[in-house]
Length: 340
Image 1 (cartoon, rainbow, N blue to C red):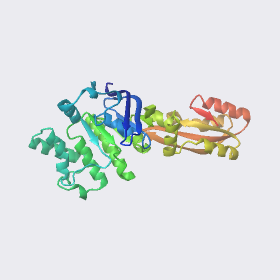
Image 2 (image 1 turned 120 degrees about the vertical axis):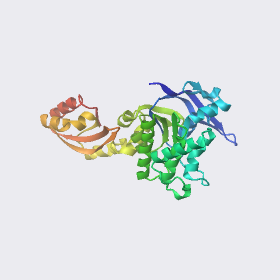
Image 3 (image 1 turned 90 degrees about the vertical axis):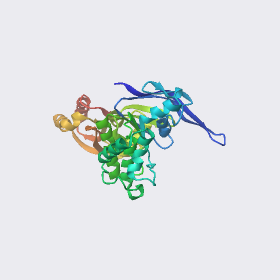
Image 4 (image 1 turned 30 degrees about the vertical axis):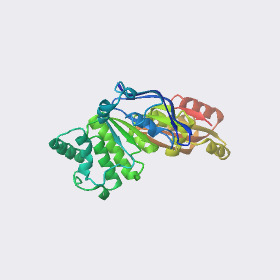
């Protein structure tokens, strides 16, 4: 695959009016492949939105380079930059719609700025309204729309110019869970039907787990973890990632919870990473019977990302010492097992 976006050793510093120096980003390097959905995850103040705004040159790096389709944005300005921005749509958290214009008028704005003919604009806007499910709202003002409908208008406007890249800055943060799921599904459709590369900024793990192919975890302006979303969720490597995943899935135990449970469950305790093999075949029960071992589930759960299972089961094992050792040994050949 071709890298559509490449950030190399990007840093960004700000100095406030009072003279306070802040490093928003520090030596960030990552790439976004053509046609993928890439997530930028982190808590407030991690630098996610600053990084996103680098991709359309709304922010310029203090050092390092940001390349889009092989072009270093630091070397582009004026008409050339404006032309490049036509190929980069953006969806905002607070919708940024013009209340004085109808839904049709809001979606038409970028097309008029790009010099489209009136007949072509009418056809394009009508097609987009049908695509986002608002075919009957063309001449309604934004104040009469729900939050989800406003965001649908925002997405239609963002892809009106047929961009190659779509940037989504906390697009679901102001929405309820059901509407969030609908907007996530719409963004996925944008990616699948038009092949648009999407970069999503969010602090919502359910959004990124449902949407992204790969993700970067940011903390205090640095990338602390990077990889396929299923890998990040099932086998987090950084403590921050583990905390974000644990707070979302509740399938794993914190160290404090483990310490408390050691007193309650004095038997052998293990945690087993869930994958296809554990879900699709009765490995646990078969091996337990074969080794004459019983187990109780202390905590755990299974979820799916891109239809692939992930999760963790924490078990207390009961039986003879030798039988338990043999059971754990054989189970370890089928799944990742951790003693605690």
